[in-house]
Image (cartoon, rainbow, N blue to C red; front, side, top):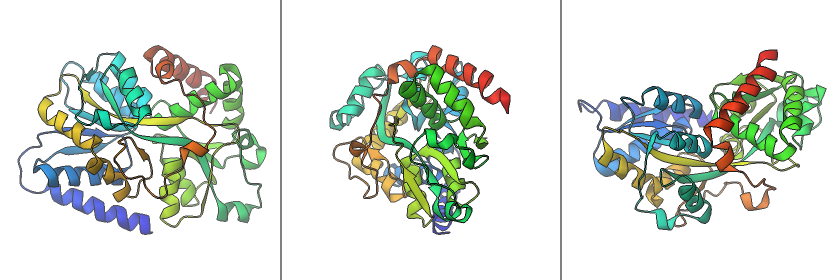
Length: 340
């Protein structure tokens, strides 16, 4: 309930700012992070600059599809948040505008590497490890074993008790797919996904939805980024967060300017703000627990220590390519989704 109340308060601020009487927004942003952070960023940027902006929350895959569809006449200026491999894909399709941010030199090494990999088209704003979480109260009630590994999730005990995102729309779920391929090899990963599919209650459009469902006791286990689970745990929900024993992948969330943006100069100012300690601080202020990319930014106290988690050497270049992403999604649709 505390999380719902907090969201209502932030949403009220968002709606109030939209009713200021200004005729039109001078910047349009598609937001790929949690709704509360989207709202907090809008409020903070407007308070700092006096410029009204339009911020719409969508899943990462849906944002990519919209930017593709509007390539000839973009209605979006900035894509803020969401998994970096999807930003890389958009950059490789010439959908993003190169820009050298003011704070690029303050970025941590992983963010600087990501910026170079993108050809200067996308900048990393946060990092977070993938994992899953289960509802401890529900687990105890059902008298089930606690899962600690990816392969535990295929146990028949969890039949119909797991939610995961749909990788066609969810950047989180595509990161899961790419992580499993890198952990187990592609064919073994798809055999694993076929076994896991028997236990999946629902593939959600949003990557954060499974963890929220687990928090509320609507499902037992949600596969998501660990920082999203931490946010729910901080709100008082009985979640146990798991870094899978085999290892796991991670995301670099990014910000990009859309090629052909109508408000290019304001878009550049927004990117600079998003990479500043002040802009990145809106994450922790809205209850988010990602690791910020600016070395001068404060680390949220509850952020998972990714240095202590067994991580794959995530291949952003390969899994951010249009060809590889499209091929893996086609295989997922044919071998996994088609069996539901």
